[in-house]
Image (cartoon, rainbow, N blue to C red; front, side, top):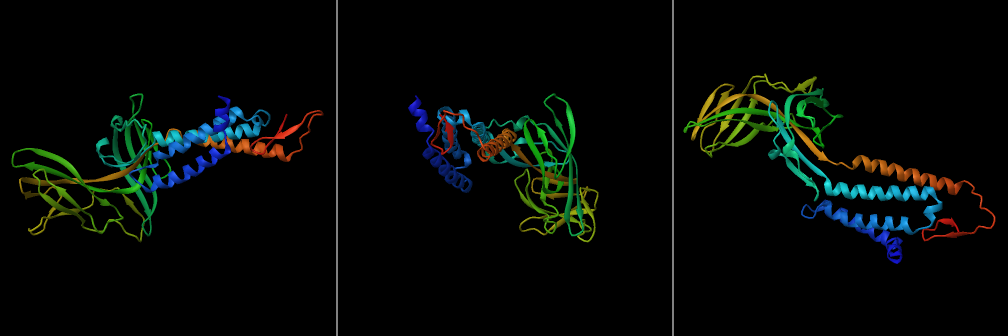
Length: 338
């Protein structure tokens, strides 16, 4: 058993683990099919290597700084591995006055061991206010929503550029991405009615082209354009995004037909039914993250730094050697009393 531990503690294995980690991290980040989950293999090797070194290397028993450094390094690798396996990264657009829909979340990355609980999130979007300085330079963001806490209580919170919210263990952060949405009421020739919202492109990034394609419940493809009577964003003055009381119209374009324009409250006949513009809302995009071991990774890194500082401090400061004792070097090149 001891022979196996000494082989696992080899510095050559440490070098192999480091090189493998660097190579697989680059490969995984550049290939969506492989993903960074593959880095858990070299991370597991490095954790086993450090644990074996802690159990077999005698220098750790006499050099506290060295021991603390390697324990911290072991915990850093373990936290990175667990984060890779359990992490989640995604984003979603939530409509003002609407509820969070887990089915609308676009997943960017998800660890092999992640237990997706997005469908347990109960969240309702409130007002969104984004202040801009002259030149359309974003100053600050205030997005308010209500969410159901673990206690069952419905809480209200405002998030922004420097503040995020923790909901069911997930971190929700407001992004720079937001825009307008047109509320549409559909009444089919069969008598069925539906109310929905068509999200327009990000605003004011694409204020010059507020166009989106909509497929009606009857299957017809329609292009809708949101046009404000007056420019709502002025790069020469302070401006706030979030108002929905501005006069506007919606242009309807269908292939092979002349373009039509309707205003708020007006209707237009389409194939298979009638569409009516019911109002204007805004939507806010959120980044959703699940990184439970990130704080512990920071603590472990601080522990490793403290251990390294203590180790170098003891090597710089003079240390007296008791008479009759001898010193020897271990495999790491560190001096230990025999």
